[in-house]
Image 1: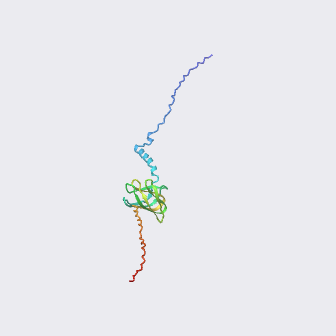
Image 2: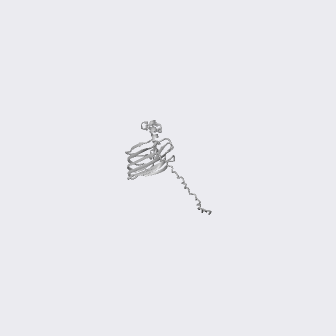
Image 3: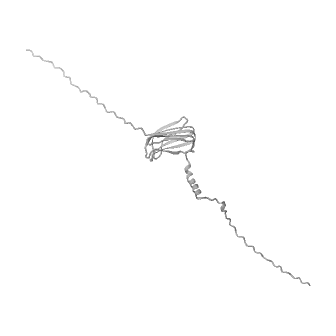
Length: 205
């Protein structure tokens, strides 16, 4: 019998290390680089955004004003105006103390809507309202300025075109006292008694 010799073949085992989980790191070059100044500007815009609502937007505005503590006027002309339906507060700096004023408002607009509310006192109560028309509208009234002497009014416009408004003020008229006439006394003549003549008696000698 022939004997079969078996050969032993060595087997090598290779160990592969387990891959570590990779961590994605963002590239700093692609991250927005906000400076402190830009952040402040964004914050300022965010704070002012609500205040921009209701601004009096007028295209082609031309204003002339003469303001004194006694009397004055303001003329405003514009090509177009729109306040998005909101009443925008305006003020004339007249003095430093509240005062009574005789105010006249004139308003005219070719098309669209232009409404002006004149305010009175610290509570800003509406004294009178002017609704502009193509022919022109006018209102007059006695108005009290606010506690710092400003004459206040509100403007509301919607698609207003080729408009103008004028406000003028002066001291209120001084009331003239009415004199009550004093009663006139009429002397009534007293009744004088009538004395009848007496007959003269002649004695006969």
